[in-house]
Structures are given as structure tokens and as C-alpha cells.
Amino acid sequence: MTIKPNITNFGKPFSYLKDPELRRKETSDSLLRIEGALFSGEHFEDIEWRNINFVSCDFVGGYEIGLSACINVTFTDCNFSGVLSWGDTLNVRFLRCGWTGQSVMYGERHSKNTVFESCHFVGASSDKNHWGAVGTHGEALFINCNAKWFNLDGDTKLGLQGCVLEDVICEPSRKYGGSHVTIENCKLRGLFRMAGGGTLVQSLTIRDTVLEELNLSNTTVKGDVVIERVRGGYINAYVKEAKRLSVHNSQIYGNRKKVFEAYAGGIRAIEIDTVIFGGDLTTEPVTVAGGTGADLGNVRARVNDSIVIRNSKAPRLSAHHVNTSLLQLQGCELESLDLSNGRIENLQLSGNAIVRSVDFANTQVKESKVQPLAKGQAKLEGSNIKLN
Image (cartoon, rainbow, N blue to C red):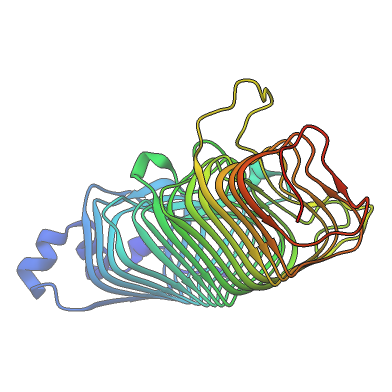
């Protein structure tokens, strides 16, 4: 930020910002342009800003701006550092703006058409206690933005398009009813976190994106999680619940320890199709597991209806302790497969290339169609599966 004159020195424009009713009487809310002003030390509270273009302005301070609403407003080449509230933001655009340090700035829950384009956000340090937070408790769209050590939020609708993000948190609060989240053509470096019991998502779609680590653990998803044409590292899709998890046409290479995991006990339908999973026999297996509970004598009520994995590759695949109506594995290439301790109504294995063992131990099925396996390849202790 450069030294700029304080907004208090701007005469009539300053008066209009302080007193919107005066402005309305004198100008009928015609467009107001404020350029090269410093907003610091002066309070703007419980008022509405409407039809304003802020250009090359600096907003600095704590709790000095607390609007009731911000409507038809643009911020171009502006800088922000502090704690500010815009009220409900309606048709608000931030273009080439910057946020630094522990800045916290939000629009409220009725915010719509609030766009951050070509903006940059940099927190104070890697310590999450010193990260900044920007967005709205309503709808927010981030286009071609760069962020590091920041929270980016849209608590009812969040879009990330063409962004480069490093160590970023996006965790829509269940307080606002859940967010529809779309991430497209982004680069997610470091950890991208949308996790925890307080996070509620209505739907999540990630497409055409490169990532290093995605953490969705313990998130509640009311609808679907869709991951398409994604390339990169470790994905923790161990969501607490979801209607459907779909992973298609992706390459997921892991982080040398873990590759991919999902909780079959909380997701109604899981479909993995044409996915290459990385790792080796020393890496933890690709895991789509859970649902029976640990006590097989007292199996939990079934949540999952189907687990379908097609045309995919993995060193090791584990679907242990699943409780499902359908488990179908078709056209996959695996070193080893673990289907132990399951309760499966319909098991279908066909056209798979499995190099090492297939573990069916303690798994009970109502019906099954299992492809031919090599002699001694299957572990069947405690299982009722009959091999063809």
C-alpha cells in the first residue's frame, strides 16, 4: 500500500459515503467514483453503499466498516488489511484487489453475485491461527485468483474457477444451510481442506483440476460429490455422508503414504470409473471401506446401495467391512484385492487382472458371480462365497 489521502479529505464524496440519504436527495444515487483514497480511522456503520466505483483505494483497520448492504459496487485495484463487514453484497465485484495478513472480510447471508476476479490473498504465516478469511455467508465466486494461507468462503454457493491456491481452507458452515461448491480448472497446491463436523455441503463438484492433497474428511454432503478429470496427489474422501461419490477419468498418485480413501458406510452410491491410482505395495491401499462396524455379530444398518469400480488401476484395493446391496468390480488391474469382512447382497467380479491374492475372509454374500481365479489365490476362511 502507498500513502494516500484519507477519505475524510474528499469533501462531498466523503459526505455521501457517510450519509447515503443526503446523496440520494442531491444526486438520486447516480454513480459515485472514489479513487486513490485511504479508508482508515473513520467509521461507516449500519449504512448502505450503492452504485459506487472504488479505484486504487486502501481499506485498513478493524471493525471500522460495518455496512448493512453493499449494492452495485466495484472495487478495482484496491488493497485490504483488517476486519471489515460489507453487509449483504449484491452485484459486487472485486477486480485485481489484494488482501494481506489476518484480514477478515465478509458479505452476509443474503449476498449474491459477489465476484472476486484476478485477486490475490496472502495470510500472515503458515500457522492457521494467522490466516485471513474472505468471502460471504451467501454466494461467492472466485475467478483467476491466487491465494496462500487463506480461508475462501461462500456459505450457500461457492465457485472457484481458474484459481491457484496453496494451503487454503474452504469450509462452508452448517449454520447457513450448506453450500453448493464447484471447483474448475484450478491448481490446488499444498493442502486444500473442506473437512470437519462443522462443514456442510449441499453438493461438491471438482473438474479439470490439479491437486496435491484434498481433505474432505468428516464433511456432511447432502447431495453428490463429483470428481472428474482430476490429476494429482492424495484424496481423503472420507466424508461423513453423501448421496453419491463419483470419481471418473482421473489420475490419483498419492503422497507416497496414502492414495485415496472413502467411507462406504456413509455414502449411498460409489462409482469409480477409468481412474489410475498410484503408489506401490508399500503404500496404503486404495480404500473404499466401512459400513458393517467392527462387530460382525452386530452389523450396522446398511447405508450403501452400490459400490461400482470399473476400468481402473491400483496396486492394492481394499473394500473391507463393506455393507452393501451391490459390489461390482469390472475390468480393473490390481496387484491385490481385499474384500474381507463384508456383508454383500450381490457380488460381481468380472474381467479383472489380479496378480496376487483376493481376500474374501469372513465375507457373507446372498449371491455372487466371481471370475475364475488362480489356484490358491482366494482366501475364503469364514466366507460363504462359492468360486466358479
